[in-house]
Figure (cartoon, rainbow, N blue to C red):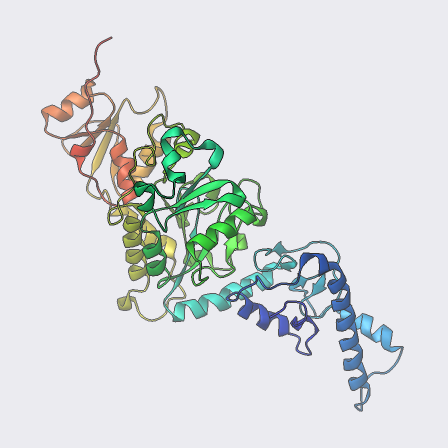
Length: 451
């Protein structure tokens, strides 16, 4: 369907575009007219709307009781600007309801649906409400997925280390083992590696969610990655949001997602870009396949590609988070709570699931925070509480864990004497990533050597 020739802006139905947009949210928007024709066709679109309005007035004048005072052109202009139209959105500078030519760029741009589409807050709310009702009938929620370090890892060809050169050799047996997951994108001068289990993850997640891609990368990159992840366009369709769609610099927001916040989950490796939507966020462990990715985040170690290794498919990050998503979905649609899902909030479900991770643990920290730092404000303290643990500053028999980087502190020695768990701070972070209390013996605290 061409958004120009078939646009319902010039339909006789005042709600034509609204109905069209509802359907377009689930359709492919790649068949839009060439960009170079946009300006000419926008002008012709306006002429068609005006001609349609003239025909409507001619029809009205034929009926008894119609108002015929003044010229037809004057009546047309009055209709185009009458107060009864709230101008819910703009398509190619035309109001999507009355067809009036609109100046300026009011509303929120939804460029990933169509580059010339802007919607007002009331229309966005209407679309979200309509879409949510439909989605809930099918027992689905929304899932917003980050790309880099969450679903995949990319590197520029210029940044490949000598130990990674085997990745460019198509005849290398090790490279052959990556078939279907490693892509040489010559036009973009980069290599992209899909995260293990990603295809199974997307297939299973699509049964529970309507999915969006949301990346801070450029649109050309986002679309190319979407092709690798979803070559048949069955998971994302046109729901690929990139940096150009963001309404706030260096921040991602759900204002450009046509889904109710109460039904949206987000998977991302970076918390700071979701300042307004942390309650919707499930933080992912970063995927560092390439050496350049490790360097970018300050890790002085061999990358997975240099080690000729990779994450485990059945036990990796995506397999783990899929189980979490399945649990959240199951709790949200719990049949024992009845059939009315409209008043439920997935953010509350996420909190309940997260609080079960370290439930029953009482934690004291030792030399983890800087001197005179307000302990309650430290991210590890807050993280532990979000995971259901109780945090304290003083020791007592009810303490179950002492978290420290030094086994020689007074509190650390107490933990060993009282047969309590003495663990490295990484234990809390790992439990947070895996949504499950991790074995304490995997996070030992070493005795620091005297200088």
